[in-house]
Image 1 (cartoon, one colour):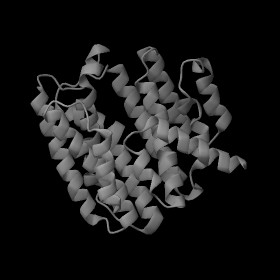
Image 2 (spheres, rainbow, N blue to C red):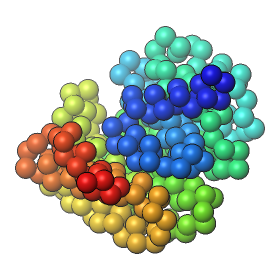
Image 3 (tube, rainbow, N blue to C red):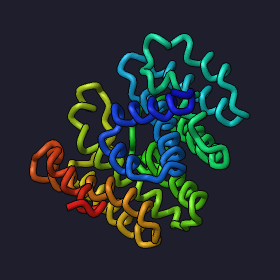
Length: 273
């Protein structure tokens, strides 16, 4: 197997291991688009693992994320990136240590957009790590969810335009990302509290976060209206419909949708009966 085929295979395996939500829709994309979206997802997952790492000190997380952000703003230098990870090589997961590989997977004509978005995300994460994710109000939550998820929507908007000229609304793309992130917050809030992290703004109850998720998911529904490409529409529909389903499950006290429910949703969207 050639090096590039090995990289594609490794990236696919890593995607399957790290994303319950995105592995399925990415697997349905055409090859060129699949490379771009897989690269983008894994680059962002690589830095997300630093933000969420249970053993790294806050100062180490912030400094590493800032350093990554700075390196990604310059012409790609694998040695410089690997040097940043070296002191943490026994702590960081494989998806993070192989960030250079995920960058190499990306088609060159969209690479700058993905590196810029990942760089911006890393800097935003670093800022909120230092603040210990303490949100005073909804504006703080909006800022945080922009950096960790709204930027995914912005980056996908760039990829769609690059791939086939599909134009989408950036404000709605950000809401699409925020909606998915807020459902994740609701799904994991008990686990987060056990590790001393609370993503709810001061004074917010569970219902406030449910309402925040609902509002953003509804805007996510509107985001889909501009998408005429069936491939891209299915990609966006799958995580959005799963997020709506997960939210409804959480409201009635279930932790998540069952695997059978997930498969049924996906099959309905991609036209398999």
